[in-house]
Image 1 (cartoon, rainbow, N blue to C red):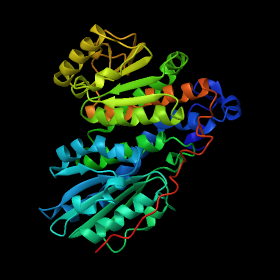
Image 2 (cartoon, rainbow, N blue to C red; image 1 turned 45 degrees about the vertical axis):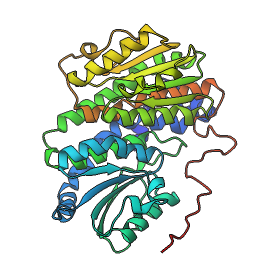
Image 3 (cartoon, rainbow, N blue to C red; image 1 turned 90 degrees about the vertical axis):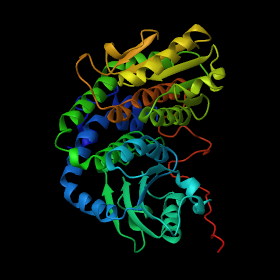
Length: 401
């Protein structure tokens, strides 16, 4: 039995509904791919552990150079993975780490690559067939002193998986079920993100096994205990959603905003920001038709700043509805209309960077149910072809010498 069959489908039920219903609504792939995530996280951990020695050898080969810089890249949702990982990667490896979208790298390669520096380029891609992904690899090879390529992808046959030139490279493939068939990336996003976090923490794999189990439990709880509640929110009359996060959760806010916009075909406009940054102008976007979603950190120091902002928003224009995603009752703000607890146990603590993996699920669910509310098909919400599973129409032009 495959993961997609094993999770939530023993009785033909996915996200609280019969699979046949989602099939009829053009939603079966998205529903299944959201629900399968907690199991895929466990499989991804096992896969990383099996390849830990080979991964460590590859990384050590690049880390022998003092001038090595790590660049995390991808396009769209895959770029947001880099935004989440940049801080943790720098923390755990001790190497300067930056996140740049491949869409930036190919237009201005001289801003990011230099013949004076070596680069470990870590590329994330679901299919690996977007023109920018392959072009970014080629630009790095051309403009850097030396490049080491770590490819993290869901497709063994994608162009990215087979195109690195002569540079040293390592290809890490996610479980087959992670290669989402729906338009919007859900399980592909979270499994690639987790793979990146685990690679950054290779030396801690044994000690964090219990953390991965806890992460999977949090994901199951989000999906099975809060899907119906989030579905009710999707039935409300709102036209915009704001997501706020700090540190790694800032990148999760980025992905969350895109997920709702994609799944609603742009009918719901979304914004993202950090808690501290939101005061500096962006707070003006909150209207009486806005849903505000707070992705709260479980770091007590960080949460002080976040709760200040929550109180500030609630004292002015609070929007139509407010949701907070917090680890447990001890970490909630107490100000929002819906408090989503990842755990009922106040003593359990998930590492903050791992919290960024599961905290995107509420946005996936909100976008899924709002898509249905708008009579769209979540698997392919863009009937006019404005967006597609693999980006179309991108020309890669030769760089001037």
